[in-house]
Length: 564
Image 1: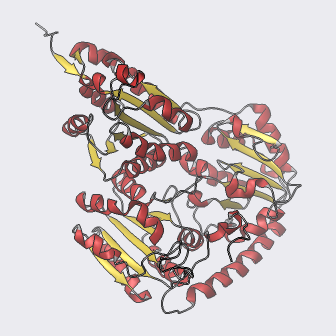
Image 2: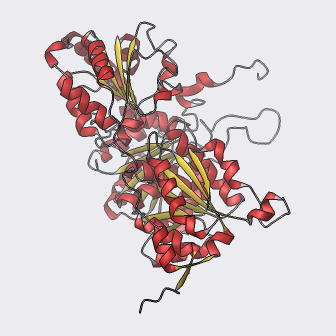
Image 3: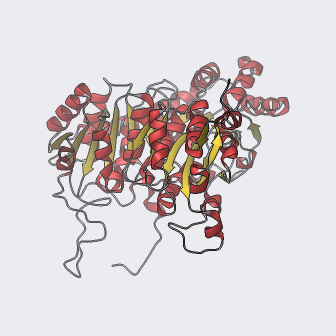
């Protein structure tokens, strides 16, 4: 006779629901009231990766979502832990990464009357302005539906962050196992295809047929969509040059004959029709205005979110739908004979590419002592050409801007950087998330300032023995390390310790640490780390005077006349 009286609790139901929906990894920081939830998940075969700070755990979950198109899961404690994770959750929403943050919370009756409970905070409502959706589960029989709604919200339409609030009373509440099993289900088709209208496809092809200097801009959304085969077919069938945004590098390889990456300014200024594939005319593209854009440019935009259309410039031919479906519809209706020849346009682009490549080569080949960004990154790129399958994590100001231009990518979703918000501190979280999700070698190239935000996670990297190589570009400062405070003995606002021995931190946790003062030392250290796959940190010493304030974004600094 079946025993219908067996009981379970909310924590087991959470794990059952996550496991039923294919969750393989949870990233988090445990404590009251979620410690046992992590233990149960681990016992049930879900890998739990424990971090030193919730923001880094959230970043790992977010980048896992970007790589897989499945929501990454971040687990935090209540109040301060929730708030720490919320920064990463907001960043995931801004970048359109599917992520779910699950946080324990205090007793609702006490929170609502503000009676001063342990870590009391109305987390669900605080999260709402920063996420796609924010839910709270108030009884154990609703855990299954709560997780299902969170999954669907995270991946449907324009992906983003979702917050799921689980009060301690729900986690510990008892429920019959039979009822618990009935409450858990698999989410069916959470991100269905969204086909564009035939009218919009026809209009886009009409505009394209009138183009003489067309350009495709590949954005992060194109990379996320996993439509690289369709996109490649479209670009090669039409013969249209393409410009990849930072995280779209590798959707088509950087050495593709139609890549216009090294002629960016020229193509933006001169293109007459621009096709935006998963890219938005936000600050990363100068809002489609200013000196780098022609006022006469016509736009075709592919986006799954209708509200992104006409955000900065009028979009003559909007194509609303998921990337793969839109490209397939374009291909099925495309008559290549209706398009103009672009030989002169491509030839002119090639001339600019050649000129810019020669300028960059001179910078890379220059021998300096100490190293600078260009010759150090050039040496790294030469070595990484032999390791094209690695994941590259990149953050900083000058470190980011220069690496984006120098380090070539050949596979989609392999370049992971600060994205739309431009935040610092993603480095170690993204590195761990990529290493755990894909079980591949990760190389993180980070500035010394950026490393400071998440550097303690090297202990996590060592604890889980992850194949992560970190290269810290150490010039002793934020932007540069040679600023002097002329009024007191305190360091200047941009100063860090040039003498910082970051490699010793890695050694303290059992990893390999190397201080590289020359190109040869840098290359040998990188080569060894890639071959042995051990957690490694290379403290790459570069000239303190190398770098400019805000990298390529110095124009965003407010003007002041008060500082002499």
